[in-house]
Length: 159
Length: 159
DNA sequence: CTTCCGTTCATACTAAAGGGTGATTTTGGT
DNA sequence: ACCAAAATCACCCTTTAGTATGAACGGAAG
Image 1 (tube, helix red, strand yellow):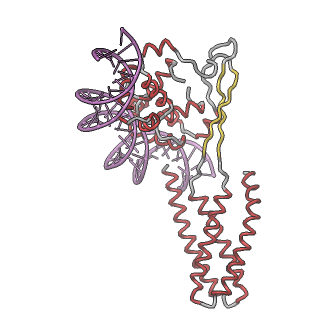
Image 2 (cartoon, each protein chain N blue to C red; image 1 turned 90 degrees about the horizontal axis):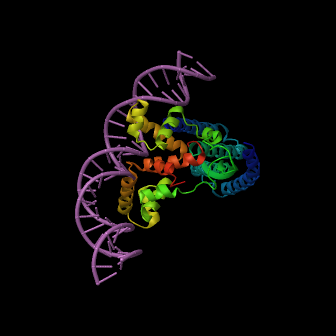
Image 3 (cartoon, each protein chain N blue to C red; image 1 turned 180 degrees about the vertical axis):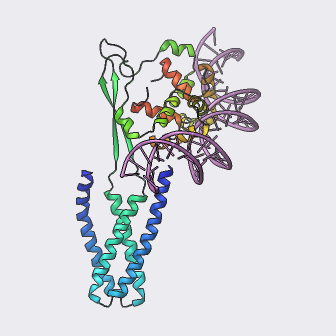
């Protein structure tokens, strides 16, 4: 985090210096060779090349890497473990006496969604989700959503 | 790396053509408007801008989408045998480049612990845990701890 | 011996989560 | 039709999480 910022700063400074030097160089070249009208093409070409390179450099250094991670699940046969990934532990589930909506909320919760996102997903208000999750915490005897997910998984009621 | 060079070659041709066309255009503009010697600086500035833009465009085109695919081996039942525990997906784990402490925090996180509890557990301050978890979120490209746990589990780096 | 990285911690702030209470509206079952 | 449970939402308030920024320190590598 800090290092990234420092890198950015360093690049910005380097860019500033490089730009200044380049402009200076261009000005100098202008006075030195512009008498030769024939050198005009080369001059312009050089400018084009240099600034194209500068653009490339800028883009690569300042643009975000934008790494997209695609998760592909590959099923492998392994001794033990439940088939197809998950079977609900009905006994534990019944004991909790979660309502439909509460269970639904719990499942979104386990997928790492925020209350607001769940609310949008289920077309209800944020307050409603809060109420549901509070009830879930009571019924499951936990204090936090992360704990809820962990316990729910251990009980076998969520994958 | 190899794909990058291949891409570069393909785009290099396009770039060459584009460059030729642009130079031609510049030449034309030169004959048309260069009678005004005062416009020289503006002319050069325009060239610089255009080619900087071209460079940036090139860079964005050259940059590979960089879609990292993580293949997760998911366990599936097979007759007999002991209950398979957890095996860390080393490939996915290495890709994240989490530090020791960060991984440690992630594990407590997955157990549903609050930052304060993790801080007590690891004998450091709450702020330290916050820093660690922020770094984890950056490296794992997530926004919340619940999301972190879910993704971490999908990647196979936590049980 | 610098330079980089990881670890530690702080302060200040914003955002999200959670607790408590009360209220209205569906809805399913007798 | 009536009742209880579920579902919905609101307000207020506290706590926890998360962001941003900066800084100090020690170890490892060049």
